[in-house]
Image (tube, rainbow, N blue to C red; front, side, top):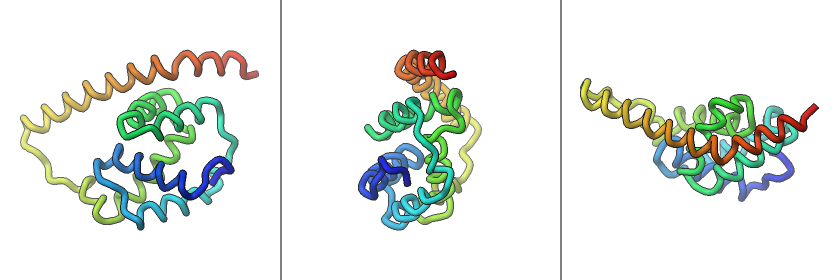
Amino acid sequence: MTPAEDAATLEDECRILCLALTGEPATPVLIEKYRLGHGHPSFQRPWTALDQALLGTARRGPGWARVADAYAALFDRRGLLRRKLVLLFALAETLPPHHRVFEQAPLGRLPAALTLVGAGVAALFRLSVGVVRFGPSHLRSRATTP
């Protein structure tokens, strides 16, 4: 856990990120495991300005978390937000009831194709919002970094 994150902050963050990732509310067990997972050394590194911007935006709600993740997925793959999402994903896929989200029965071809197209359109929209929101400050911070 970084100095800027207390237990209450991590609980709120877990609730928001869990809704964004699974569409389901976080259980107390998941929240506790998420909080404990922040003791890992990969969460002890100093935060960059981009980490702060992405995480601050993600903490605003599930929709904003998806926007921040869309940007981070392409431009900050090893950043703090992605590490937090990987931790949450690993926990959610092993803990009930969240594991069901990852084990859903396959759809028919047409529903699967429509779901895929919808997901692609939504991802492009989120990425566009993310580029507008984070791109300029990310570029500025990279220009000033030696």
